[in-house]
Image (cartoon, rainbow, N blue to C red; front, side, top):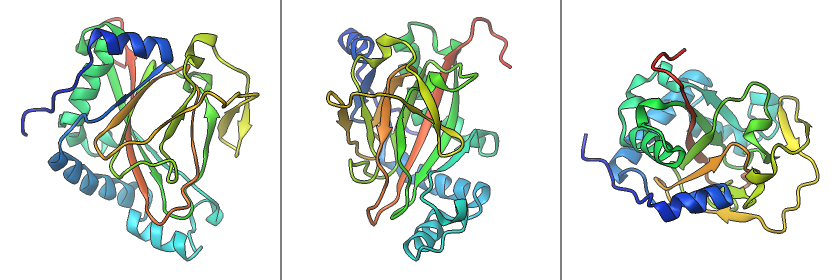
Length: 237
């Protein structure tokens, strides 16, 4: 492993995070690691979703995707690190934990980070409606760090945030598409769009309203997310 990429989380940026509820970072890992992570990511999807990202894209383009009855989908895989523990020994993971610790003003050893895989296939990657992560029952995460492995654009599903929405508590939500939630009455006039290059990242508070569009482009949008919470003791469940 090379030395990790440095990142700038100065006090000014900490203040901005707590004022607006999110941050956008240009880079939290190296090009070499991004390339390595793409290979691991594709293997995770192939093993745990049953199809490689390339096969999913091909079937989606032909409108023959068997997942979700062929409807627009977002492939979501929780805790791939349980099957691929090498993910925990990456600059991406270590830097994300340090960023979370700095923003939450605790030691990195107090942060528990769980990885998630998100894939929006080309032509059929589903919308993620406006919501707050803390609205989901049982949620204990304080913030999430979201890193794309492909260019994340407004057209293929980069994240949108509403600044300051984390200061208003949890908004009313209703069920969306069976297992999801959508916030009610969201005023999107102040929404900020956060496109990112591969290896860039957004960090958002669990109460921050956020959204991503469907992916109707010719390119897939792969992303890794680390959900972070703070433990009060050294024992971890």
